[in-house]
Image 1 (cartoon, rainbow, N blue to C red):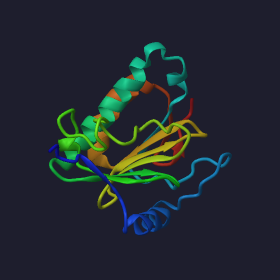
Image 2: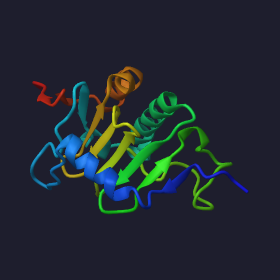
Image 3: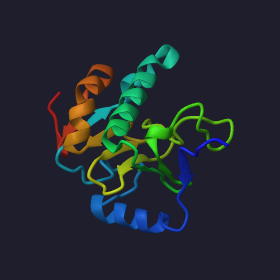
Length: 172
């Protein structure tokens, strides 16, 4: 029997969302940006450059960079993968791979850092680092010094345009 790399949050999902709303002052909106108070340190990139990405090479690279950074930071521990108003998960990144599948036949992470139609959020269990993908602003905020140290240079190479640093607009 394969080891489960992720499990759906059940009884503690409401508490996780309550804490997320309170910690990040989450304000879901299709028009008001940003939807969270972006922590310090953080960098928010525009994802609009990925719209012209034949073959999804840059999207795949962005996903690979974020996943590798999270995996390196948590070791054998877990992170939270939140999908606003949809099932959410606890993921053990070190177990993600074709030999460890959950649900059967679907190896990999349950969500992408790319916000495909909804807010997609990766969070350390203690909320000290993570990502926040905004589907209507088409942005990705990466926060926490440890995670930024691991991924910022590669994400800048892939995504280019930085929108905000530490929640403040960056001049174009």
